[in-house]
Structures are given as structure tokens and as C-alpha cells.
Amino acid sequence: MNRAIDNADSPREYLESLSRELIERVVEPLDLDATLGVAEIFRSLTASMAQDTEHWLEIQNRHYRNQLELWASYLLPRRDGPTQPVVEADPSDRRFRAPEWRKERYFEYLSQSYLLATHWLREVINRAKLEPRAKRKLEFFTRQFMDAMSPANYPWSNPEALKLAAETRGESLARGLRNLAADIGKGMISMTDESAFEVGRNLAISSGSVIYENAFVQLIQYRPATETVFERPLVMVPPCINKYYILDLQPENSFVRHAVEEGHTVFMVSWRNMPREMGRATWDDYLEHGVIRALEVAAEVCGVGKVNALGFCVGGTLLGSALAVLRAKGRDPVASLTLLAAMLDFGDTGELNVFVDEPYVRKREQDFAQGGLLHGRELALTFASLRANDLIWNYVVNNYLKGRTPEPFDLLYWNSDSTNLPGTMYAYYVRNMYLENNLRVPGRLTMCGVPVDLGRIDAPAYVLATREDHIVPWRTAYASTGLLKGRIEFVLAASGHIAGIVNPASKNRRNYWLNPEPGEDPERWLATAESRQGSWWTHWSAWLAASGGARVPGRSTPGGARYAEIEPAPGRYVKEKCG
Image: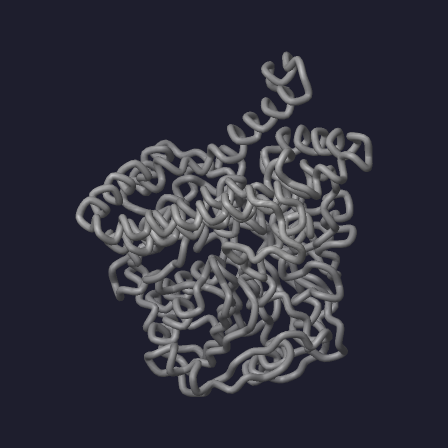
């Protein structure tokens, strides 16, 4: 433990020291000033204000009037009945739902003053005349600041935390300190009760075997659940920045199990959590030794010329790149392509765009010039910061201020189980995809020794996006329909990047949109799309069956004649933790 924490003389000093340690170990890797150019943006904002003094004064005067009204309502004797708030909280904002925020004058003033300040900041930013990229960065940075400054985040200004501390005679605060110290030790905020889950015990338990491995991947073949199966197997390529078992969580929400029960022989790529000696591995290595090798092995095991292939998130980007490489080499290895919440065109990457500019990419290229690893925690924090109230501050309040253990939730357990990436591969990825958007341009990139062109991929494609995705904006995923040349089925699912994908057919939840005519304009596509109730899984299964080929007896021998079982699923690679 940090020496400053050990030497603290009082509980308050102890809490302050722990908080500083948490910030240093957890928040500092984001390096917001270096990443976002915060100082430069604020200088531009100041210059913009100087050129628009009339509107700036109008915003300021309105804010002062509202603050005076708030002070007056606070100082004057309270009348009978509820007080009309100066500013209304967003009904969806869970932070101020406790009745004390409206009934107790101290807490009422804190919440109202905070909400006034956030409204004022939004007005200032909306009025600022900045170039679009700078304005987007300013909006992001300001939201991080506003989220952090909420009075709900601090023990002396959160009525629920104070009430619980009184009821438990301080035990809730003591538990909170222990939770905070434990999270500092691992460098991450706990989002779920991690003791409730274990990979291989109640996660990733679909029956199968590892039948091939190299320094980059293990390839899992799952056992059949039907007497006959489709002739062509299905190869799944998950994101390499997370563990594969997002597609094989628990039996009731396992996408793998669904595909197997539909009669598919499923192969899963399990990416290795890279050790330091693999820090020089490249994007081409991931294609050649990961995706391409997996497609080859699956085809050999099943004795077919073509397989069906599926890629999720960056797994879809890797799969698209690999297929473009193979087509450039005169090979046509897939009968169909499924892309789930994946980008091939990186023209609009949403709020992730604020982290990636030329100075950031140049710095990462310098950092990894001699190899090295991008720690999985860094990417996990970046993604969490996009929804800081839900994925950071919500757990700060629950775990530390209230001393509670988060509820068990398999999706959040997976979300915290990140993987390390080779620095060389990561630097290539952010420059050529996120910064320069090179993959979409025919012949601009050379991969595995050949120029690549996504337009040469002419297999039927099922392109799925999720409407509330904050990592892969659905309109960006839609752009793939203009790059691939096969017959395209674009489907838009409700919810976000993970919940929209992991939507079991058995629960019949949410909905999805269909429109057989993609066209160039995603808004026009949506305006004329048909909404269907339930999970997109059933629609995808019917679509994939057309590319499955004939039915053959279920393949009960893992690896077939050429490959033997190395170990039972889920294998070693998925169990390795970030060091």
C-alpha cells in the first residue's frame, strides 16, 4: 500500500490518500491532457468568447440570475408544499432520485447548484465557435469534469451514503475503504461480484475441445447438439481486445450454444493474452496466424472448400482484412460473412474519435517503437470513460461510499476481463483505421504482402449494427454495405454494443429493424425499415442456413482425422489474466 496511506493520522486523511492513489493508478493512464490537447482547446474557447462577447454576457447573466434565484429560495423560509426547482433533473438521471435531494434543503441546494452549473457549461460549449474536432473534444472533456463533480460522488454530500453510515454506525464506510483498497490493488473499479463467476465453471462452458494452437490463438471446436449438422462449419472471430466468451457466457445467453443447436459445427478463435515477449507482433501476424489459419483448419477438419465466417467488433475488422488478403491471393474461402457491430469504414468512430489524433498516434508509435504491450486496463478505462456515470461513478458510489458489493453480472465480469495487445499491432491499427481510415480505400494498404481491396469480397454478408452503440455507431457499421460487393442483409438491433448482440432468442426481448434495400443513406434505410419484435438471432439463423450446404452426420470427433484434442474447452489462453 502507498506510504502516504500507511502514515495517515485520521480516517479523513486515510480516505483522501486512498482517493489520490486511486486517481493515480486508475485515471492517470487515460492521460487526458496529452490525449485531448485540453490546454490548447481551452485557449481556443477563450478566443471564441472574446469574439462573441454579447452572447457570452447573455449566458453569464442568465446563469447569475438563476443562481440568485436559487440562493433566495434557499435563504427564505420554506413555504408549505413542495418547492418549485430552479432547474429540473433529467428523469433518467439516477443520481438524484433519493427523496432527500428534494426534501432536505442542504442536499436540494447542492443538487440544484450542480445542475445549474452543468447547464451553464453546456450553453458555453454549444455557443463556442470551434472547429468540429476541437468542439467534440471539449464536449467530451467537459462531460468528464461535470460527471466527476457531481455531489452524489462524495461522502459528505451524498444523503444516501450518510444515512447508511449512520444506520450501520460507520460500518458501511469501513467496508467502502476496504473495497477501495482492494480496487487500488488491482487498478480497476469492481463492476460486479467477481467471486460469482469463473471461466470454465459457469462461463464459457459449451462442450468442445481445443484442436489447434499457435503463439497467437487457440482454436476451439464445439461438439454437435444435433444428429445432423450443416456441411459447412461456422468460424467465429471475436475481438482480440477482450476474451472470446462474450459469445459463450452462460447456457441461457450463449450465442455459441444457439448456433450449435441450430445445427452448425462451430469453431471459435480464442486470442492469446499477449505476454511481453510478443510485443513486436504485427497486424499481419494476427491475420496470418490468427484469422487465416483458423479458416484453414476449420475447412480441413470438415473437409470442405468453403466455411461460413463471423466477426464481432474488431474481430470483424480483422476478418474483413483477412478475406481481402485471401481474395488478392486468388482464394475464395467463405460461403458467407457475418459482421456484428464491426467497422470496415472508420469515417465516424463516435466519441472514441476524441482519443485518436496525430499527436496521440505519433506518441504511441514512439512508445512501441521497440515493441511492448498495451495493457488491457488502458483500453477498458477508455471505454468506461465514454459512459462515466454508468461505468465509473455509479460504482464509486455503490462500492466506496455505501460499502456494498456490486451485483453479479456476467457481462460486466467479461468487461473487466481484458487482454494485453502487442504495441506494434495496436499502433498500426489506430493509425490506419481510426486516424487515416485507410482500409476502405482499395489498394491503399498492403497486408501479408498484397494490396487489399474490400470490394473483392463478394460473399453474401449479414451486417448487424446496434442502434445505441457508443463504440461502433450504427451508421458507421452501415457504411460496410457500400464496401462489400456481395448480396447484403443489413439488420439494426435495439440496445447497445454488447446488450444488443447478446440477446437470446429464448427471451424474445427488444426488437430489430429490416429493410431489403440498403441504399446509400442510412437514415432513409431506417425511415422505411420494418420493426420486428424479439431477437435478431432467429432471423440470422434462417439467413445462415442458406449458406450451410447439405446436412451431414454430426461431427463427434474433435479435430477430425488431422487434428487431435489438445485440451478441453475453454482452453488455457482464455484463462490467462493481464499481468
